[in-house]
Length: 161
Ligand code: HEC
Ligand code: HEC
Ligand code: HEC
Ligand code: HEC
Image (tube, rainbow, N blue to C red; front, top):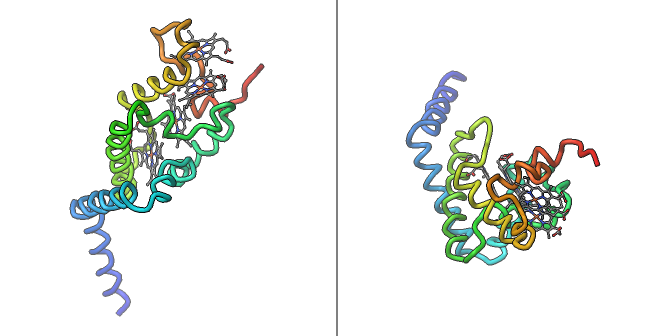
C-alpha cells in the first residue's frame, strides 16, 4: 500500500523535528566541530575561510565581496576574537556549534542579527586593526553607526561619493 511507507516516514520526520531530533542535531554538530578542530589541518583552515561561512550565509558572502578594503579580510577577522588563540578557539567552538545546531534543526531565526557579544567582538576587532585611526575618534558610538559601508547591508546599498 502506498499509504503505509509514507506514514512511516512521516513518523520518522516527526521524530527528527522533535526533541530527539534537536538533541541529535546538537550531538552531530559537536562531533563535526571536533573533527573540524582536531582533524586534518586543511579542514581547520577551510572552516576559517569565507567560502565556508558563505555556505550558510550566501547573501552576506556576496555583500562581503563588495566590501572594499575588507574584501581581503576573512569573516573570522571580524566575527571571532583574535587577541589570542585560546579565546579564538573557544568562541569558534561556541558560535560554531550554536550556528550548526540551529541550522541542522531548522531553527534559523528569520532575521539574523549580531547579539551583544557579537557586537563586542566585532568592535574589538575594528579597534585592533585600526588603532591609530581610532585614537583620534569618537569612541562613544558604534564604529559602524558612521561607517555604514562596513555592515553587509550598507555594502550592497549604492554609495554616493
Ligand atoms: C551550518 C551553517 C552555518 C555556517 C557554516 C556558518 N553559520 Fe553563521 N549562522 C548560522 C545560523 C543558523 C545563524 C543564526 C543563529 C545564531 O544566531 O547562531 C548564524 C548566525 C551568525 C552570526 C550572527 C549571530 C551571532 O551569534 O552574533 C554571525 C556573525 C555568523 N553567523 C558568522 C559566521 C561566520 C563568520 C561563519 C564562518 C566561520 C559562519 N557564520 C558559518 C549558520 C551557519
Ligand atoms: C570588516 C569586518 C567584517 C567582516 C570582514 C565581516 N563582517 Fe559580518 N558583520 C560586521 C558588522 C560590523 C556587523 C553588524 C552590522 C549591524 O549590526 O548593522 C556584521 C553582521 C553580520 C551578521 C548578522 C546579520 C547582519 O547582516 O547584521 C552575519 C550573519 C555576518 N555578519 C556574517 C559575516 C560573514 C559570513 C562574513 C564573511 C563572508 C562577514 N560577516 C564578514 C562586520 C564584518
Ligand atoms: C583584520 C584587520 C581589519 C579589521 C578586523 C577591520 N579592518 Fe577596516 N580596514 C582594514 C584594512 C587593511 C583597510 C584598508 C587600508 C586602510 O585604510 O587602513 C581597512 C579599511 C577600512 C576603512 C576605510 C575604507 C573602507 O573600505 O571604507 C574603514 C572606514 C574601516 N576599515 C573600518 C572598519 C570597521 C568599522 C571595522 C570593524 C567592524 C573594521 N574596519 C575591521 C583592516 C581591518
Ligand atoms: C561619529 C562618527 C564616527 C565614528 C563613531 C567612527 N568613525 Fe571612523 N571616521 C569617521 C569620519 C568622518 C572619518 C573620515 C572620513 C572618511 O574617511 O570616511 C573616519 C575615518 C576612519 C578611517 C579611515 C578611513 C579611510 O578612508 O582611510 C578608519 C579606518 C576609521 N574611521 C575606523 C573607525 C573605527 C574602527 C571606529 C570605531 C572604533 C570608528 N571609525 C568610529 C567617523 C566616525
